Image (cartoon, rainbow, N blue to C red; front, side, top):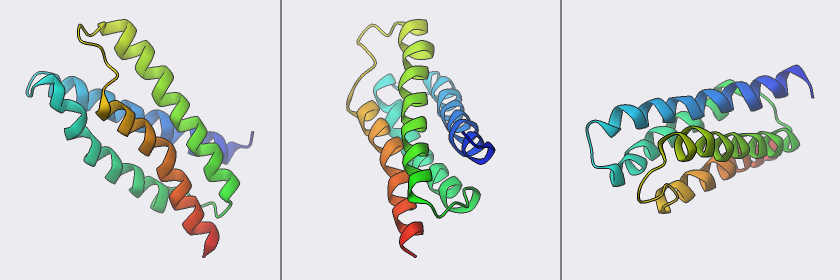
Length: 119
């Protein structure tokens, strides 16, 4: 694995996950639990698109496929460890907003990578 892929995959992936995690903890004190994911989603999508368009320079679609897989794995594994296992939510964690988040974590790199590779 090359240095650029490590930065783009793990560096940006961990940062994106951590931003959502911190926002979730902050919002936990201010809004109903069921709304947290829906409030974070637009912020996360905007930040993800900004990173994909401004910070990741590759034009290789394969690079974006790898990023999509890494980012999705980071989101799923870290959510399980640091949210499900740590906080043990009474009504469960996996709801529609979480599945939406996983879908966009995986699909946004693919969409941006496809657009960059095509141009």
